[in-house]
Each structure stands twice: as structure tokens, then as C-alpha cells.
Length: 565
Image (tube, rainbow, N blue to C red; front, side, top):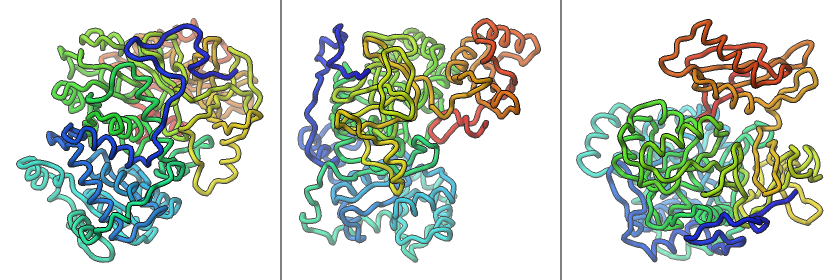
């Protein structure tokens, strides 16, 4: 069955302002939409970085300088440039500066391995890269594997006020190898200086918002890393949709931007939505629980967003003991499944710290930038990821087909709307499988995720189709088992995988991390297994158990079940 907000039969929408069924989207580029905010709110703080406030006026000036510098370097409309930076101001300048001249920011994780970065450069056909001084040596190795034209090196200290800038230079940056400006290597300050020779406004074309603006890398529906081409409209639509679903006003609010800029959630929600709406993004370049908690105390943000492991880490530590979180207007979880137990635990944590809101779980994929579905602010259903964004339609199809299934029946989650990607770079066959035109004439994104829809249109995510375990002919869903395991008072985190079996095809194996202070004893293990026997069907019971101190995670904090496999 198909669903959109206009199908809602019972009102859940806010008295502050109803969520409209349809929205108007900017016909401008991403940078054009931000320039409109700059014109309206020039003196308001756009970015906050390690104690420094950058106004929208200053942001506009930096975007202009960066755009001119890239143009002077030879970047032209349609060219892709690798931006390999954490959450620092220069990443934002590059994103919008490249967009101003019609070029494409290709955002990647700076902690990626040498071979991975070489792959990104080749896949996206980038001849220019921007990174921090601490990754300079790594990029010299990358150039040996995959030679490319220009490498721009920037520093954190360049965006700090004195005396923090001096401390950064003396205590941190002096430890990095000295940057040698030769063979196409250039320091940021000289890169920017070079742009002063570009004076003509003709370098800023009227960009078509339906064309490629950003490339993000993701595993897609097959698990093979691919470059995802996203348009200006994709990001501008996401910004307006997220604002509409927020319930509380976003303008002049503060978002703690800890989710990375090379991730759809971080770039789309924590940066572009905030910039379009005229709020402040508090940039968090490096995450650890203690500094994150201190930032919450110090900056009193109105919005925070993160993956479940972030919220789990907050509840496991005492860094926010006694903190007043009544400042919060929205807490959003995405990027991975939020277990029922963790949601209950974090909701209680919020209530205990004077917050008047609860965590709202969303769902999305990088193929539609990030979120396309969100739990309403005033109506929850246990295990549900909520209702679709305005102008976004969901349907559940029988896997491998375009045939819709009835309410309550599991199938593949499919969606269509203004945030759906342009396609994958150099993967035409998978584009045809993932972006499919249905009988209604619309192109639908086949997510590769299992889920169902109830009669009120609430979506329930199960898991990746490829993660499903088939044992003795039965389908077993790891996320359901993990929910049960984490319902035991001794279990902090779990992961369930299928391992090959000569008779059953696959057997179920559970990895478990116990809570701090819980000893790994035979009695504890027996208690967990007994809990599972009470709540899990016999055919789905884990046949193997492995207790660990921690579980591997991906670069954005998800449990890396493929490594365990």
C-alpha cells in the first residue's frame, strides 16, 4: 500500500504550524538557497567552531573567496573535487564554494585508508583534493597509488581565535610532517590568495537545481561502495521537509553538528538544513563522549542528531549528571536501527534531565540524502520509524518486484519524492535495479530494506534484505533478536549474524557486550540464554554465543556486522 502525509486520517500535526502535504522548493542551487539566508540574517551566527562564532555575513564572504580560489585553480562547472575533511569550517566553505561555480563537492571520510581514498578519487574522477595537514602524509601515499593534479592542505588553527590558534599550532600541528608546496601541493592560505585574481561575477553561473551538486559514498543496496550523485533539489527539498517535520521552529536555533559532513545525515540535516533555515551549526570536528557532553552543557543546543551508538554512549557515562537539558527542542536518531530498549532508556534519560521532548527515530538512505521518514512529535508506535516526509511517498513491494503488498505484510521499502538521487556513478546496471519506473509513471527507489506499513501509514523497518538469515527454511531477522537480547538487564550491545552451516544453510550466532560492572559468569550467560528461550522461537535461537568487550563499528558509528561475518 502507498502512503504519504495526506493519507493521515487522524490529526497529529502541531498547533505551532501544520505540516503541509506539499511544500514549495527553491529553484536555486544549494549555495543560492544559503545566500538567501545570508541576505536575511547577515549578523546571526551561522557556524560555531571551538569557541569562534562565524556570522552568516562572514560565511558568505568565505564562500565567495573559496569559489574564486577554485576557479583560479581551473575548476569549472561539472568538475568534481574531493573534500576530505572532518567537521571544520573549511568543509562548509568548500561545499558551497564549489557549488557557486557549478562544480561538485565529493565528500569522503578523512580516516579512510589510502587505498579507499585512491578508489574515491578514481571513481569520481577527481583531479583536486582538499584535506587537513594531519592527513598530508597519507595523501602523498595516495598520489603514488593514484596520481592526481592538485592537493590543497588546510589547518584547524586557521579557523581559531588567538590564543587557541597558537595552542593548536604548538601542541598539535607542529607534530605533523612539514607541507612542501611543490608538485601541485598548495597551502590553503596561498590557495585563497590566488583566488583574488578572479574578479568577474560571470564565474558564478545560474546552476540548474536538477543537476549533480554533491557526491557521497555508500554501500548502496548491494554493499559495494559506490558514489551517489545528489542534486541541489535533493538537498533543498530535504531542508524544507525536515524543517516542516520538526514541529519546533528551527530558525535562530542551535544544532550540535556531531554527525560528519561526509555522511548524508550530517551534511543534509546538521549542515544544509540549518544553513537554509537560518540557524547555528555547532561544528564538532572530533567526537568523544566527554567533550560532546561538555559541549551540550556549554552551548545548550536546541537540536541534536546522532546514530544509536551515540545515545547509548551518553547513557553509559556520567558526564551529563545533573545537566539541564530543557533547552532541547528535538533529538533525532538515524543511520541505524534504534532498539526499543535503547529508546526507552534514552527517553528516560531525557526526562531525568528536564527535557520535555523524546527521541524521534527517522529512516532514510544516502540514496535520498538521508531521512525521508520520521516519528511524529506527538504519536509513537513501538518499533515504528514514523511517517513519510511531505511530498515523499512510500510503498511496500514484494522483494524483487514492483508489486505492492497489503498493509501489515513485509516486503521491500520503496519510496519516491524530491530527495531521491540522480543515480550511482558508473553503475548503470544497479541504477536500473534501484531506480525503477512503476505503473504510476513515477521512478521509485528500491531501498533493499525489509519493512511493513500499518493501516495508519506508520512504517516499520525490519532490516536489510541481504542481512536476513535463512536457517532450516525459516527467515530470521537479526534486528529482532538484537532487540530481545538488549532487553536483558545485563546486555549493553549485541549483534546477530548468520554463519554457514552444511545442514541448515545458516545457523544463528550472537555477539554480546555486557554492561559496565557486569561480570561475565556462567550464571549471567545462562540468564541471558534463558531470557532468549522465553522470547525467541526455537528455530531462531542462537546456536553460538560470543562475548566481547566491544563490537566493531563503521566510520559513522554503526555496528559493522560484515566484519563479524
